[in-house]
Length: 434
Image (cartoon, rainbow, N blue to C red; front, top):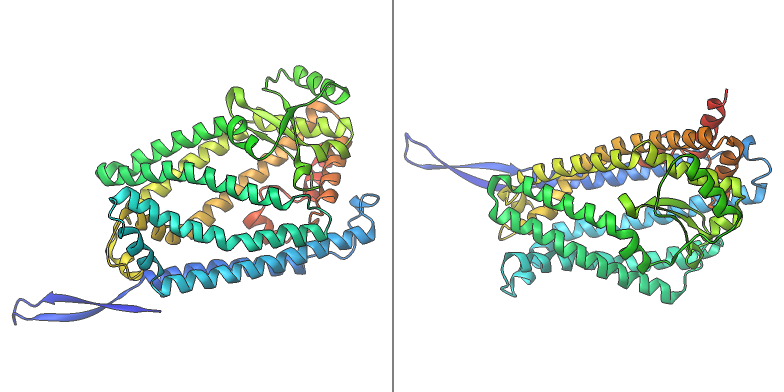
């Protein structure tokens, strides 16, 4: 909906005010961004489905049988249709909320408590974010207890599902209140350099969270136990010693508490860094395959991928805060949302809509580097552990166990994939041996 606002200019000759109709372009621009982002996702998913190969790639002979390969493609199609439903529901809700003055109504509710700018902002943000979370619950439940259950992945109980939601809300509330309060306070008192102070403060706080997450936050959701003595632990320790790699340890996580899917990851910084293996991964892989996975994760440290990703994240957040500072209390932006009063806290939400295409561009840029890092980590594992077939077998088993799409469309990979497609990774490993 286009909205026009009169602007009165004084004519010096006639001594009269002339009404000049000007158009507020923020609202149509935001609608174009929202709808454009939705359509881009729709096109990408459609092309991804059309790109499915009915014939099993020869590389996976002996790993996938025809029925399971067909099952993996059905799994992808069902998830894609479900994603389309979710995206459609939320784009309609968002557009209706904007066009029906939803933000102004929530602002009036938040201001009715007469609590000052920071507390009012927390109520405003909390009401919107909580509503968003509540709307997501039935979709998350369907995904977990219907789709994941249908394909043999789900191990989550209703009790765990509810507990995860409540714990997530609690942690989000604590972290969100701290960060949001810092931003509101600094933009309220620090003048033109507020964006810089916000950037520094939020960066330091998030780095602190990265340090403590493995020992304080993640254990709230899963149980982490040091890998028990045995062939696997000995093999990992021998490899780490050969590479002079120091770490807090290798931990086993009870991933089977929620799903049969397999995974491994590294987490933490400094002396808190640790490598985590899902118990489901350990159960389905040989020792050489698991050490190859560990070597891959160590490769990320050796190649400074964690540091590079952190620096990129810090730089892009600085850009975001600077651009945000240009739109704080922008009257035209508030007019587009039919807000009766301006505020710093609402500015953050409205700027978020404008930032969407920039965030997409940054995300694409980051994904390009992430995929490059995965290739480098694979090569590090192969060169240092010297068992390329074990690495290839691990990649194949991970794909089969998770019913991964073996032939994603290039646009899907370009826009969203942080890891290269598995066949590309396998080919890179093989070509590196020639």
